[in-house]
Image (cartoon, rainbow, N blue to C red; front, side):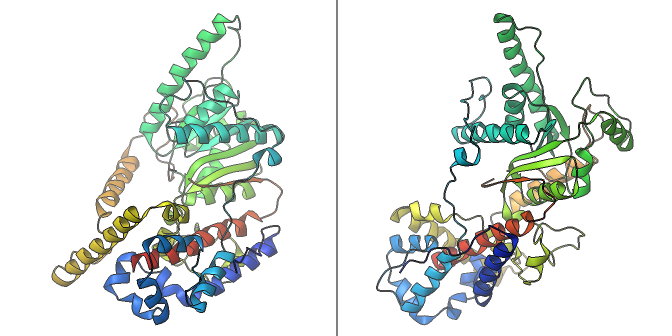
Length: 450
């Protein structure tokens, strides 16, 4: 009875067909997708769910409930419920791991030495080992002169690309502290490699050291400017202004670039894809995006010229709105819920229930406090707001630092490598990825909350 996915992304038309199928399926259930989990309790949203479904699920074991986000049904469930979940499963974007050796015939990730891997946990080390080899392969295939690591963090990927793969690299991040850490770490790694070269008699060999830039990439124009900005050859001259900086970059820039991002957060992944389409110098993008909940969306929040979702005209024609709550649901992992045991599952349900109960108390007795259901996250949001103010107020005083250029920094989970062909098929593909993640998470979280 299991339904396999019958859709594909082989072309823009097929991708759009898939998106339309998702949109048609989820629109009748927008009251679940657009509701914060707290509101499922507070607004009694379960009353809008089929009574047969509720009666069945209320008597179901915790273990069975945890399998719902993965599209697994029980034989004794109502036919309509099984059909709903299996249809949902047929629309899932598949998450099977690709055979990278088929995509990249020369793919052979090198295990990082202890110096390069310093500070990385096992997950980060694995990601950097794999992604650095992919970036190196793509850069070689498109004959790129340099790689720009967008949202570089502490420079783990950039340093492996520079020291291990001998690529010219610019590491861009919004946080000036990350830039300082990257530079300090690069100096330690450089000393190690210099010592090794002297030991083996290759002391004249030139080492590539990543150049760091602190910049908030809040727009496509900013990233396009950066692709024509930093010289990779010789000593970098500190410009007196952004305009002078662009002139210096245009004079020394190579003709082809690769944009790479490990955990490129929210709109940052979108900006990278748009830069590929609009900037002639960019020949390829290798991006592992994350934090889909932080995507800006047309029609929500402040009016903007550019939005992270939707990207393509095709998806805009579907008139599909996700909203913040559904984007938050997109960050949930069906695999994570499936792997939870009974005790851990019950604990998660209890946390949701108690948080909702607390919200209802606030709503009744302290309405001026309990306006938003984001209780528990407001402290983090306040810290982020204060950090953004600090970044904006930093003077432009440090070498290779441009804090008054507009960005967003960050983190990731789905990998996408797109080469520059002049076509815009990346746009509906990205929209499908975001939409699929959102609706896949919604069913399991709504019923788990109930």
